[in-house]
Image (cartoon, rainbow, N blue to C red; front, side, top):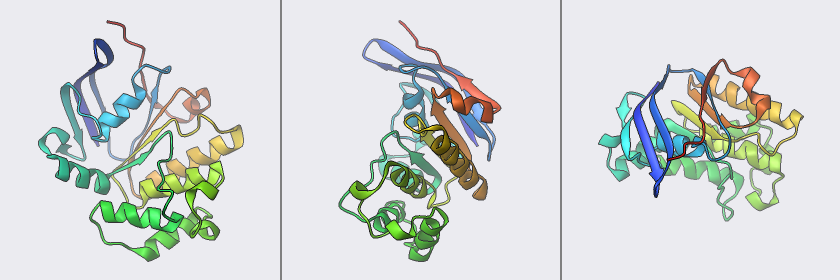
Length: 213
């Protein structure tokens, strides 16, 4: 579950996010909609604990993120929150396989190489497990990023514009993959997008608008 109370955040004098309250049940699938500049990425970064809001509280899986110091917050994020960024941020010097092992290591959970191999097999990436990220196609890199986000069976999966640059076929594949992986571990799924193709799949939606101050 998640609960956000009185979230406000600004960059300089520009308020980019003003959210009185938003919450979702464990296992819910939610959509954050809004044009570029409406605060979607800022909201996801706040929910992930990558950014501390200037005002308000963020509770993820019954944990108030403000109560965690940096090291504990990093560990909590690694264990309970999976993130699919707009850009994959894969480590180019590591193979696909070791990118997933690294996610386990950074979360301070056992490095289960059998689980990594099984995850890659599920996503039809076995042939690429010893490849390096720069050699992957866009679709392969996206699947690796999703695999990394879910390898630790998180309680929450956050995806930032995961379909923005994809054609209709690959858009549907990525959405189904995110939804299926979230269901497997009963994770709350939150997707931020301005992609109109995604709207019809989600009944729980939050719409953000550009805030001018």
